[in-house]
Image 1 (cartoon, helix red, strand yellow):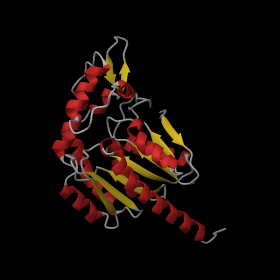
Image 2 (cartoon, helix red, strand yellow; image 1 turned 135 degrees about the horizontal axis):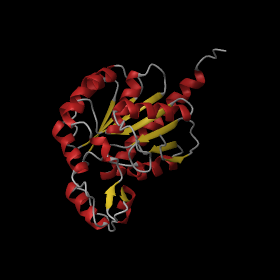
Image 3 (cartoon, rainbow, N blue to C red; image 1 turned 135 degrees about the vertical axis):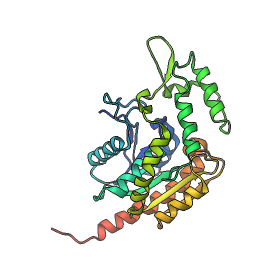
Amino acid sequence: MTLAADECAGGRSLPVILLHGGGQTRHSWAGTLDALAAAGFYVVSLDLRGHGDSGWATDGAYGLDAHLSDLRAVIDELGGRAVVVGASLGGLTGLLAAGEDDDERVAALVMVDVVPAIELEGAKEIRAFMTARPDGFGSVEEAAEVVAAYLPHRPRPSSADGLMKNLRQRPDGRLHWHWDPAMFGAPTSGVVTAFRERAEAAARRVEVPTLLVRGGMSRVVSGAGVRAFLDLVTHAEYVNVADAGHMVAGDRNDAFTRPLLAFLTRVIARIGNESSSAPNKD
């Protein structure tokens, strides 16, 4: 499996890995990546398997364990320890890595609009959008109309050209979303039901610094879901980004990036101080 990534090698040593949500790409973090890089962070933004420019799983392996295995491999490649910032599917993957692994791969965790107790109707809406156009689009403008109807709260860009990063042209000339259709083998309700107990168990074991960010208009994460998560991870910090939906970074990038920068600056400085003061075991 080959994973595509954008890398900004800043002066701070601990890597920050950005994991997008299902149906997105590494480009969904563009503004955040630039802001973190400008602040001196070492950032790696990945395309998850089956998304963007990353490889497709020939065996159809798109479950959470496959994404978790990929994340572990990437962290190992980067030196064995990293901060994980994950949206939706990326956040669930980071949660499992932080709560299930006994090693110290995940030094800190940021979960963006995702909790173990997600709202099933919101998840169904995402799935419906991703599977609604199996025949693709005749033009990028046609795709832009579909996105605008799905995200009516988000201002439309002056040009649809940027949307081409999320589309692929097939031999018949039609444009299709960048993801592998094989990702939709299991019904959403089954995935959510099977995952919740596992995610809650992982959350109870999370000890690293944690930040939960919710989009104030999200239909995937409710206030009750936030409270349940904060009861599980009692040390976690919480930020609500008003006027943002499920795709928080894309809806209100500046409002999202400011608290993220503050959290990362504090956490990475603290981790660095703890490492430098730790006794030499040699």
